Image (cartoon, rainbow, N blue to C red; front, side, top):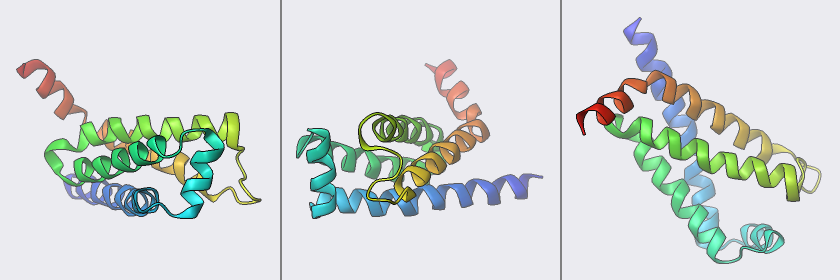
Length: 129
């Protein structure tokens, strides 16, 4: 059973890291698609840069087993913001494509599962303070 949990956790870590690393690069490199998106939201450039940095931090925290729970919380928060903006301002299907919304929901769900699997990290950290 421990082996299955180990495999599932690393699959979720790699899934989250793969997509968030790509999207943080797009945001931090200033690609036109990201600039257009954040201009639509009225948060260019500060929102794009902040979100790119947060996504990169999530990748780092999720990949290190000691900080996975904290990365999961931050990942859920950042994807919650993305989902909110898709539902309120951007629409689910941007330019006829709903891939970004679906990936945001999948990363949110993966982060939630990873948090549940690593909940003891939080309990140990909270009670050791």
